[in-house]
Image 1 (spheres, rainbow, N blue to C red):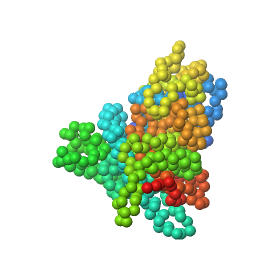
Image 2: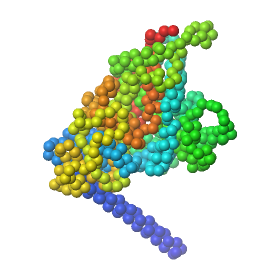
Image 3: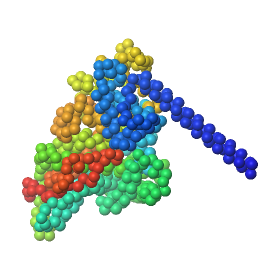
Image 4: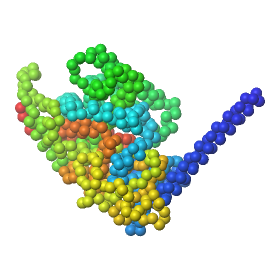
Length: 588
């Protein structure tokens, strides 16, 4: 008995000692980063809380985290003066979240440094993805180094121009199904007092984009997509969003947690079975002539001898889950916010309808497939070239991504000490390289240090601001926050940033990294062209066929309110819109 007590005592002592050492290490690391960031002349974010250590945590959990970060940046701008410009680096603020040190980096030249010039030195901060790891796994979003490079090359081959041509037909069939559904709902109203029907368009877009990505990736029928993915994906996404801010939920034996774990298991099993079945079919029928999807293209890019490898199957499973999650969430939110804005902007709506008339009006053909041989309009899109006229629609979608910043922040971690040199956004303009190619390289900005400067030797007498260049030392271990929402609302980059103005895209950008709708640099979204192509077909065709308006009793302020915590940023309430059939100039 004495021996057992001694073992328990010694075991407890070891555990407590290790815990103390771990806490001491955390405290030392916090002090190291705080000293380095103070020496780097980065202003502390202004917190409204007065609770030591937990002040920034309280700010984040009290209000929308990304709007809180945007507010800190705006406060930094307001606090700038000729003296403070010499004392502090402009456009950066720092804060701590528990024991981790964060630096918010808003100047777009500094953002380019992190996301493009030194992309290998700033790894993704996967701690923020932890609740979504069952969906993302080791896919492109979370992988690093050689694994990311190999998978990026492999998957890029599946997103060539030919798959975009196929996407046109897939998106058109999906929006045709939605048009038929809305038409049927209106027909059921008959001669009732109102010829409109109120539809949750956000939910319809979610189903539509799931159908598109499921058919493009897995050749899945819309019926199968509707049966499987909402039931499996939605419980995971909803719970993951809650766990982001309430991580303790992961450890509670609640019915929601059991539903979450069951959905993860079933989703993994379902995707794995699709992959293994496809591999068996391809190996058994090597000469079969059939339409190929993205899964086929990824398999074709690999050595056939590795198709049955467990490692390959599991990696493919994670990539497909990433495609489906990222591929439908971003597109559905982009469509939702764009359609809402068009209910408030008649001039933009008119221009999109004019484009749609040119595209679809020129494609109308006469068919006699119905029973009474009445001519029926058939609008068939088949290639990317057919939708090139939808340029303003394309701009309207990009403007929605700018205004609503559907992915409002991204984070990176400095893997080594680094010096960032940049011009403040206020000094960008005629001397900046302009481009409409988001995320493309800009080699006109030198990465060499300014003459006679040693930015690694920062002290209280160092002039870090003023002139045309600023520089800041970022110590190893610092978490870098790229505040996309703040960048998209920077008046130096976007005049009248709160306004929805698709026409602003008819002018070149002030800087390639002024818009980060699909991030930027080598790790930009590989499916961005797919998403924008799909979305412009859906948006143009819908507003050409129907009128959409806010239901009676719903104000624009209510409809445009954003959910404070969910990512991608979605409306706080369901996007319910009143739909009426439109009298168009369709002729047959």
